[in-house]
Image (cartoon, rainbow, N blue to C red; front, side, top):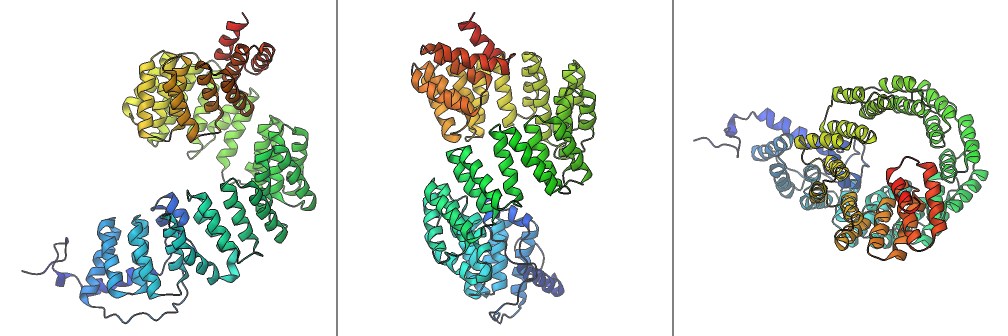
Length: 596
């Protein structure tokens, strides 16, 4: 009986020798190539970020002599099996096969291929062993050392990674700044922020005159909330490279943690000495808008457009800032200019033109722009906005029919279209119909997180608290990091004064997941009020309202102030909110209870 290859059913001698040689050439050729962005992506977002992308497609000649390996039929056969397994998407076969070949041959090309195959399959232990074999076979390989360092970082072995990182930095003194930027990206998502700071300070200590090294320390310090060190290092980076906008923007980011005014003052001063700093000016304008200093923001817009009249990105940024300030004339002019300048995402400009005309109640013009959006990232949103305009014109049935006729290309599209239809019904106070529409969609996609959440919110409107709780608990099981699922369930219980201790625990969990979310802060304030802890609740509600002066937050804040005897403050909060949100049901009901 003829010998066969494992799992192939083919006699070994029936496989043409020429095919084996070609397979070897292809495999070794692949070793010389850097994995593509798509290959890196197969390892997951974190790994793809961590994989150093530093080798060009045409590698430099190897400095270490290759081992003298006899190309036996057995070796070629094993290579063929390993590579065919890669092509067939069988990593459990390919990774051990390539790792065995790397151990047997000590050939750096095969070790490199084994590393890349294991990396892309997310077999990190195998990738680390293969990369170590690669570095042993080719001690001067910067890429092998970088991958070992990346793998050690991914596995939280920072002390083991440090000597490799030090040699990585020392290997390319002409590009030390770029190496620090890559290193910063590699370490950015590591969970032990103090350990990252300690490591980065150790690595940067040898390079005090490299601005990128100082900024890398500043960013690591920022992640540990060491504001003083972060500012000192960022300013040191700017002293070494005064025109570096990234460093200037980082200083402003740190200052903004204290107050917007400090960041505004700093960026304004920077622009006096660096008037051509485009990105700084854009961010300066954004901060002015956020501070409602609209006249000063407009001045910055005019400078940007004057200095960069042919730059589509600048014109788009100015247009969006104009939308934010409700300067619709300027926004429309800039958006049309963006289309003339062949902007990379013209559909985004068309979508915003639709929104600008919708805000100005020029509904026919808005419909024209929404209908001009092509299939792509903006398409479903444009169709939802189109239906929204029809509903504003009193054509709810036509709006629903429009959404139902849109061709969905994916489940995500179907979910978004269903959400849009349900939103139209909610706005028309057709709560039962919204509940039914979402329920029908949920039957077809029972584990869709967005549908579970929206259906729960619709169930609350029709007093189906059993469904609210069932959906949200299922969502929490599917997505244990879904802060708003915990928050919604906790708030629903607290608002009905039911199981308030459990509600408090749920909202605490939500707050741990999203500590600065104003709606979760509002829920915490509300549940504390329900528990009789009015002063504590007031603090959360004031923080929530400062961040987002929402109508329902105003209703809660006013009620707690009223309960504490601070009735004039409550009246002022309610009065201001009613001017901004005169039709909000929750706010109206609250005010009527206390001011009939």
